[in-house]
Amino acid sequence: MKQSKLFTKARREAPADEVSKNAQLLIRAGYVHKEMAGVYDFLPLGLKTLNNVIGIIREEMNAIGGEEVLLSSLQDPELWKKTKRWGDEDVDVWFKTKLKNDAELGLGFTHEEPITRLMRDHIASYKDLPRYAYQFQNKFRNETRAKSGIMRSREFIMKDLYSFNRDEAQFKEFYEQAAEAYLRVFTRAGIGGQTYRTFASGGSFSKFSDEFQTVCEAGEDLIYIHEGKKIAINEEVCTDDVLADLGIKKEELRQEKSIEVGNIFPLGTKYSAALGLTFKNADGKDEPVWMGSYGIGPARLMGTIVELLSDERGIVWPASVAPFAVHVVSLGKPGDEVAALADGLYAELSEKGVAVLYDDRDLRPGEKFAESDLLGMPARVVVGKDAVATDTFEVVDRKTGTVEKVARAALVARFS
Ligand code: ATP
Ligand code: MG
Image 1 (tube, rainbow, N blue to C red):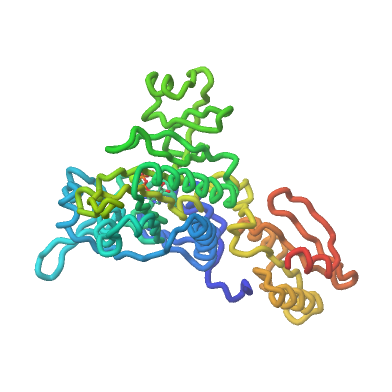
Image 2 (cartoon, rainbow, N blue to C red; image 1 turned 90 degrees about the vertical axis):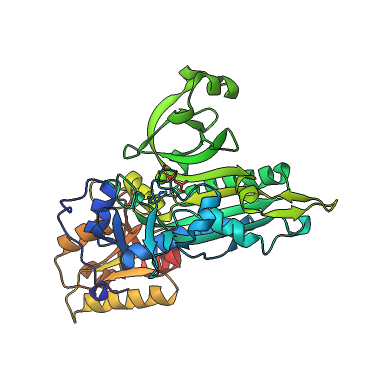
């Protein structure tokens, strides 16, 4: 993509009304636009990045047997009354609206209820189990605080997967597979080293749920890490009893601030029993389906990457999520031989399927480099006068700042 064609503009100054680093950088670099507190739009670069994050999650969900669906945001109050989750006193994040005839509707903040109800049409016998359905779907939450940029917004895409199993053993087997898939997602997204499977409060059915918490100063949570076991315990459940249960001593733990990038939840038969999702077992008897739910916020993950990996010059994307693999920066003037060389290199890389952002604009080199650092592609290829003479190019690694001279053929091979 030619930068001269990109409608978004980078800006030097951080927006005055943002306190979070992720929103400041993403807005400055033109990845997102702020509509109002807790409400963000994704612009071309931001959407590409978000879609890359989504792509990683989708691959990992498919690999454990997930089938992708897309449920409506509009929610039927009658359904949610059956699980006692319609009242504002029970759920404090609902956005509610009305039909023309004054009947109430909700904008979904999660989807256990509708997916449980719809599965009644598709699960009848033990032969119909297991089933794993997931979606990337807009959730609406009237969050009280909205100071964490795209990590906590009032409308956001969630990947939510729901598991349907015939018994606890089959459920647990899948639950562990899901936990492993989550760790693979975070590793592929470049934050695996800082992310811990974390004991957290479990709600109605189980003692614990499992959160995936990434150590970060900007986090809103507090966790206690056991480095030896590579696990953590959320402050909310870190009691003497729980530590004794887990065979962990308080002295072995390190306290850190952290971001909840994902959460997996054993649901037992809470929703299936309340909403009548049953199956006939091998003896022909009706039993409620065992369920679990599994959430990740792709934008929260994207914001976490910015919080953790950016530096004083700007964003640093891991190659797996970067909107472009390479940023080709031409130091030529329109019509000169440097510009012609850069045009040719851009065309050749693009032809080979490399995702290239090409800064073809007529701006000062310093300005271009500063913006390239801000935007954060993993590699920058500089096309200057010397490249015309030698057909070798300066390749700058965004993360380490290492500069290499690479001949054209080797450069094309490296990124193809
Ligand atoms: P938190 O405690 O941070 O509010 P939660 O417990 O409400 O999170 P879940 O309901 O488990 O979160 O949602 C699943 C995942 O969706 C979270 O792990 C997180 O990655 C993401 N998520 C939750 N709320 C938001 C939000 N307001 N904006 C962006 N992503 C979110
Ligand atoms: Mg929440």
